[in-house]
Image 1 (tube, helix red, strand yellow):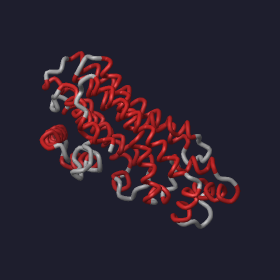
Image 2: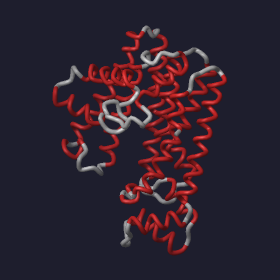
Image 3: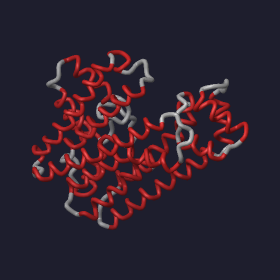
Image 4: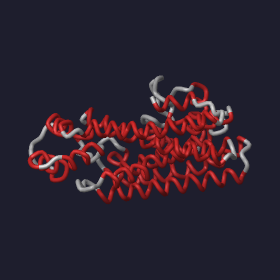
Length: 314
């Protein structure tokens, strides 16, 4: 993880939290925390430290990067729990804990991670955070993750439907994914200041940063072929379905909905490219980036140091 000592403090906080678990359960708990963008992962030095986002927001506002460490730990536990629940719901990886150990153990692991997330918030008292602020942060986190659950429900309900609109898809992304980044930025700002204007700026920044990250993933998933192989219906696919007709449209529907026909990843990728899907999705990605940049500019006008925040927009 980059960002040096702060990252090490977060890792120690995580390890302290799971130290009371039995060896086997502790080992399982580490697994979802070791994947990319989670607290125990070893990230490339050029990768923005997403796990420290709340801490970085706090440092930008008031110069203190350590106060939010228990908050960062809590959010990592909640995100890891979400990852584990996703594995149960998707059942698409032979290497997942669910595939190896069954749904009972996996559900218990996810529940354990949720409880650890709740407990981590209480340790903000050790950072001299007032109890009323801790209660408010806990309420905000639970509210945002309830929003994420709603987004996940909608995502599961749509399933492989090819008639999902762009508006509905972006709404699901906002609920399911961007809300978690918005939560990290908002609660980090809440720990650093009582200024509601600053809180709103970082809510705006967090939401648009989250949408930017997810749309970027949509593009990467098509370019790499990973999402095509999994028949994931993402924004490029939704756009292509709305822009094609005749044989090309039938081929996309066959591949993504009916699982019929013999198509290679290259053939599907070419249909999406010919429809302008990647270009259109890149334009949407840039629009969210501009909104996030606008929030950063608002913060700078208030004297907030935004250098590290800009790293997330590169």
